Amino acid sequence: GFDYFNQIRSEHVFQSLTESNKPGTAHREGIYLTPVQKKGDDLYFRLLRCSTNLKGPTDNFRSTDRHIVAAMNQEANCLFENHAPLNHVLAQIYWNSPASEGQKQTKAKIKAHSDKTKDMPVGGIMAFCTFYDEIEKKLNRMAEDKFDFGFKTINGKVKTSGLTTLYFRLKPCVQEKYEKGKCPYAEQFSVL
Image 1 (cartoon, rainbow, N blue to C red):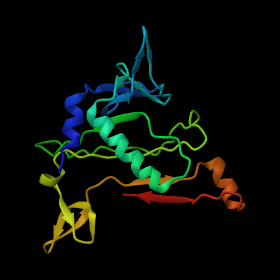
Image 2: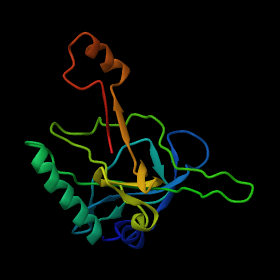
Image 3: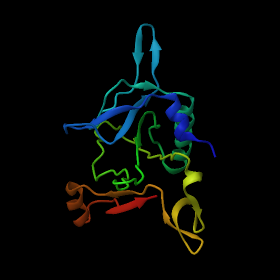
Image 4: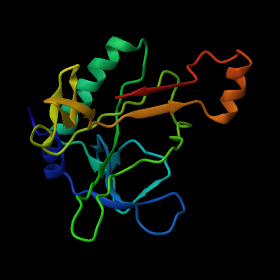
């Protein structure tokens, strides 16, 4: 398949970042991407407000970004009615470190958090899209699910998913409504 991970990395310079008001940098890199349009002497772009503080400027979409966002919008059209189009990206790279002499393996993690959605319009949607570095060389396709890749083989069968699973749960302020039967959303769910 197409190597989106390295193609995106070749088109952008990823930046170190900090989280909210925490000291030090995070164990990942990121970049904020949006279409940037020049009209006369002015530049127009979409502003992202979130708890991630990037060490550099917003960057313009490149051809790979436009291709991915167009494909995501095409999928969104099949799932949602009257939604606002996806139009900007917070791209991040999480690095895993293999075990070495005197050092345990470390895996990138995202702790439970609440994405800031106060700027979203009615009908706004968020999409999560994950690409892996040379996934075909490191993981094997799982027999039970053609869309899943795994890394632990038992008796010739791949048993453990190596892909990112996203877990969603209601915020405490919404949980109270859920318990009273006044919330139409699922209490929690996960997506692979």
